[in-house]
Length: 418
Image (tube, rainbow, N blue to C red; front, side):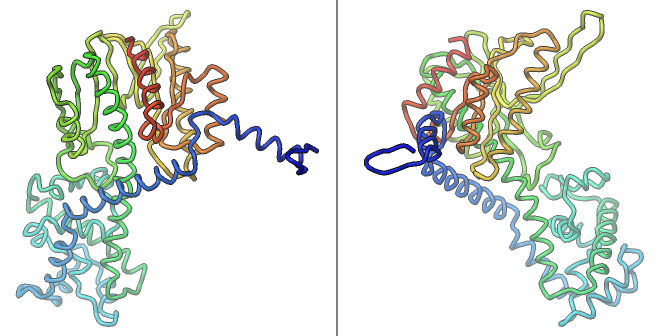
């Protein structure tokens, strides 16, 4: 037993208090976690509302509601031509049995409707519970039509309409019962899943942009920043798409000392900018979100090729070596911290292994996270103690604590060889 201030405490209680006093400096406090969650929720919600408004979901649903009221709308004609349109008559029977009977147009399309209102492609695709990425994968790309970049041809409208009708027929006949608003629920459920992917992507993009903002402004004051390369997405992405970069314009802005860099960055961030490169006057560059391939030859003459992804890394221009590399996790959900740490360490280990296998010097490694729950902070500190990790940084502390931010930026100077 341990006596303290007249009270008896167990050794276990004493050890817990002692351990708490030695938590790593980057460990998040409860208030910091709440603040990070609040910011994340506001940012995520703002993005989703903007996307919903840009898609004009309310307008699309009004178009769907008006379809059965059109003078050229004929349910009997749809029933008679069901096979040609890819509609299973059994599915139409399910709609007829609902109370009240459900208009066929709420579930099934015609090529003419898609030609007249390409926005309906977004509606029927989501009722079919299919993502844009899957449509691309089966050769029925809808991106350009949904993003208003071009209009569908008669042939593409016919093919898309028939395929979606076939899928929705299978859904309706399997469910075998529909409620008056089930078509809206199906539409919003699949759309919500896609928007969730957009929000998850934007968490990382926003965190990365915040770090770039601090680094760029700091190095600009030092007169070290030469240029910034960035991408601006064109159109409205509603889900994670491996081909998203095809809809992204890439630009480079040279930096002069009289430039109002803060205003420039604010304007870019309003456009959901994705920073790609920062170039400095000493020949060092900072690259973001890159896939790296290192090639080498073993002592026995065997070809070695190692590929890995990294969120941040610095290197000298025209060099394949790395001075510094870092993994970033922008999520603020405490329950996901362990998984974030796991995926980050897997990525960092791949860098270590690739360096060793190709005969390169391993770069200094860092881990940056919006929050550090205690168990993850201790795990990161263990990596630091073992020499695998150079440093760990708490993004919320960087935002909130000027001294902590200054220390982070001084480390960045060193990683950039300044």
